Structures are given as structure tokens and as C-alpha cells.
Image 1: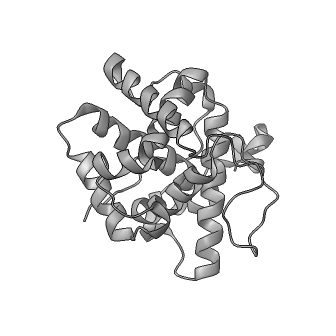
Image 2: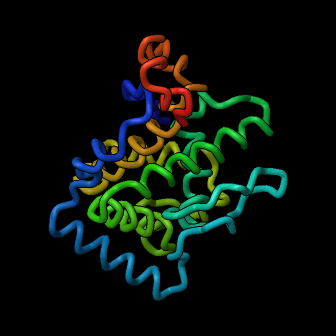
Length: 214
């Protein structure tokens, strides 16, 4: 079982900073492969449009957020992966845990929405690769749908990609953990989990936006 730790994430990284880096670094061959998968997934009927406010969260959850990048399938994917990536940081109380997962997925969506087209295209290809049934089985080696995947299954998948000799899979693992760790550990409610005390008082006073950091 893989053990994933916060990667020195203390607060939300500005989208302009993240956008200058290629999350996936797929290379020409990898980019072409991901592009082909995305086209095939779309033709097969996989969700391709942002979820908006129509997403698979329990009725009791807050539905005021409008997804602008993640599809319904992407949301299910991260519901399966987040407990494997940040599980120790999640509450043991089921309702609070669900709220934490939902809020983290919303921050993932908000962050990716601010990325440039190149990184968005790479991440769209990665998510389609994991959501499309054929490649989920053959490339990710996850036999059940993500909706039915256990945390142990998610751990095993992440560990395979982390230790894979294929660069695309290694970089896919890094991309998934980066966006997830920034969205989870970068929120002020979770700063203490990575030992970050929060911004100094003078910065909060000088920069009011710190008070609304989400």
C-alpha cells in the first residue's frame, strides 16, 4: 500500500505559477496517445462537458458550486483517489469527511480552470485515460468502475504508477498528487497537517486576500 505525504504544500499556489510548469510532460508520443484516448472516450459516450451543478454528490451536500472543468466522471475519479492520497488528513466523521472531499474537488476544479490551455489539455487527456473503461483496465489495471473502487484499489493503482518504468505513468502520478495535495493541504483548515502555522500577521494585514484564501 502506497503512503503519500503532503509535498511541502503550505498554501494555494497561484495559477500563474503552476501554469508555467507542465504537469504531465507527456512528450510528443504521450500527448498523441492521450489525445487519441480523449477522442475515443468522447465518441464512446464518456462525459466530456464540465459538470456544472449537475454532479454526483449526495443530496445533502452543498450544490452551490458550479464546476467549470471537471466532468461528472472526473468527480467520481477524485472521490475514489482522494481517500488514498490524503486519507489520514480526512475526518473520521462520515458527513464531515464527505464535505472535505467535496470542497477539495471543488478547489481542484477551480485551480485547473485557471490553468492555460496546454496544461488543461494534458490533464483532460490524463483524466480521460483513467475514466475510459478500456484504458482504465489495460493501463491503470483497475477492473471496477471508480465509483466501486475501494481505497485499497486506489492505493495499488497509485503505487503502480509511482514506481512504473513508463514516464507517462510516473508523470501522471505526480500530476494527480500535485493537484490533490495543493487543493487539500493548501487550504487553511489543513495547514496544521503539514506543520504550517499560517501566514504571518503582517502579511494578513497587508494583503486582505489572505483572509479569503480558499
